[in-house]
Image (cartoon, rainbow, N blue to C red; front, side, top):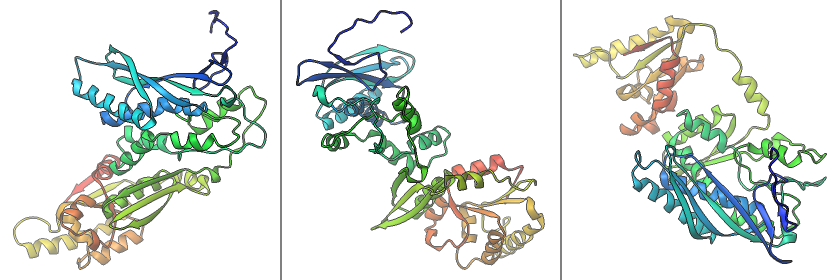
Length: 397
């Protein structure tokens, strides 16, 4: 460490000489102490879930060393002048509940005032000295086993950009807060060479740490990496929103019914490059016009006349040619996309010709018309706003 003298002790089994998930100190021939500390800024908006995620993350370091966490101390940096203390109370409660789930006792902690909120734990655990696992002991022929599906990083990036549907955010939040306790208990029954906790650097980043300086390498078949996201929602509009988001991120999506609910399952495509190539295909270099229909009639006054005008307007849109880029239906306009609509055949012809039609899912639910929609993609307001931002011109009817 840049010329700093570090005391040496023969009982230090894992220390600063090798970057690992935790430090390990031998107490006796049958007992070693594991110590780790981890804290970070919020990764979700909900204070309680942030506490759960931060605690699970810190506890995972002990599990990764082959040990069992026993005690913990809270680490808190809190902007007292800017946030209500009730927020801190929820964070600590979330962490405490996760510790209780892990069989860990909270024995103290330390807090400071800071402009930026941070929370985490200092955790102590135990392990037999001969059962300590490190990340630097991979052996030829080892197989890689993951205890959780990959993909949370993609979703977290989408959350920060405001692109992830709330149903998926909730699912990933629960996944990040899940303990690795059961996985660690199963792992203890087998002869395992090495282990590490996959967090911020992702799978490849942590694998690089495991092989660095070892003279060995790791071969990954991307087609066999179990990247999967499962989301359960209670209505078809949410199911379609989640499905479209996962497809946009390169996942192959299937859907299963579970009673009244929908389970949307996103798995890694067998050929990831196929999606990447498709994503780079440029669109036609033409002016992008978005037409927003907020009513099923045009103008005010006579309803019959308004309907005729709207029908004629939609049928005349074909004269725009390739400049007609998006056709969006909101509010009463969604009624034009259901069975019995006078322009249903015209809209289907547009869609078959490649025009993307977006239909507000909230509006369909409001009018109880979701099951009657016959054309277009059920969408949310984020997609509509994004389309308006990308369009060169927006025509509102």
